[in-house]
Length: 77
Image (cartoon, rainbow, N blue to C red; front, side, top):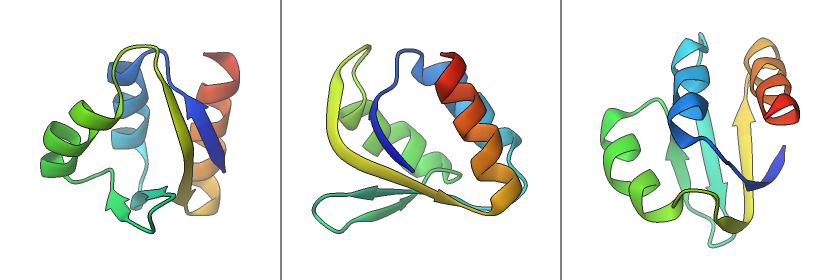
């Protein structure tokens, strides 16, 4: 799933933490960051996601039930 904007990073991370499996953020540079990792949440996301900023070409990868949960959040954001 491609994403370009996340308005409420804190709520997005709550949704990610509610997922049962791993959730990965894939950057256009080929980096694959595990969003369930607290280290990633604290360091990488603080740099990538400033409030209401266009983040360019990123995609999210997760298992079927988890990606649906994330998609529902992003559609309703």
